[in-house]
Image 1: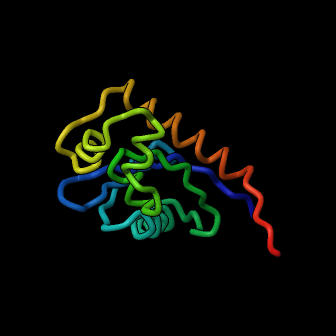
Image 2: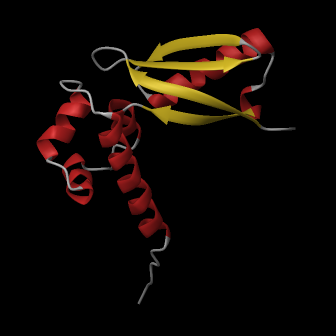
Length: 129
């Protein structure tokens, strides 16, 4: 069975509702959910219903807005990420809450910071005594 990788954009759609959208075979499919996991399940259902693409064949390549990113990776502390990015934590909280929209430059700064932290974490070695 071949795994099909499909880009999915996930963004806040007001309140705590997430909107997900994918394009497959020139068909745009969208749905709403409270969590990223629920959204992935619902979109996989749409892909099965319209394209007969089995859920276990689908791997999403997710693109998140700031709100959806911190919802998905809820173990990240906004203030710590902001500190590592050299940003004001209050400003990042405003981006996450939707009170303000980040510029493309700010989005890239946050993205670079997260990738750097992920690389550092990937290199961590845990030992037992």
